[in-house]
Image (cartoon, rainbow, N blue to C red):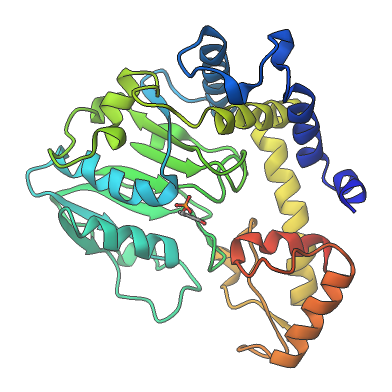
Length: 342
Ligand code: PLP
């Protein structure tokens, strides 16, 4: 079972085979990365090469720090306000809420300062509200959004044009799925587990001049200035996850970099969207065409709310094909359906 799947997933299998090869004896050192001290010269090399690959793939400008943290995207929902609200006296931030994850981030930020949702509350998360209608606050320290809402399948096909405040973005589920102009952002964060590795490590890319204004209640492990100043080893980083990320980044580089990933993602998502569009309403995607995600595609079967019997049949048949992880009820794993759709 695993063998035939590996052939169909060249990226995953190549990275995993490489990790397997090096698991017991990393580059002839006689120990595994799992056993290494995070302060050893060998791990420092892994950390630095992972950072350099990321800098190369995303053309990250010199005046940005790259840090590797624990706590997942959810910890960043707190870290962003804790580190950035202090940029202006008002301690206020603007949020664009287009789905479940940006809603959670906004709720977390409310613990630390004033949060303004820049558009009227959406009845459903199926579109990006027109930027011409956004009401930005003059005193906002930052404007926050999630570039790809994993649960709802809503993806920005543009970078918001924000002049008065710093732009902060959760790219957890479309990071490196396409090129991105980092210089338009004050801060980008992304958990590795969707596109660039396994759970345990979250990348933060932050402009240097924004460091040093963390609120006093900011936990030291979430303080970007302290983590950046210590090359991400203020405390023990998720070493093995960083190593795996390095292998994935190398794979991306060897396979055409971010531009090629974009092409691949357009092709793969088009397969499903074409099928949905041509199904005469049998498959229904609630998201407006312009904001449809290339990464995760929510759809119902039979009607807008989904016909329970038909959806069960679909999942049963897909499981029989051996392509769909049956116990994955999460929209974030719906990309698996790419190969399940007949
Ligand atoms: N942001 C987005 C867009 C996500 O998809 C997720 C998780 O699926 C998160 C944040 C939360 O990440 P974590 O589970 O690593 O805390």
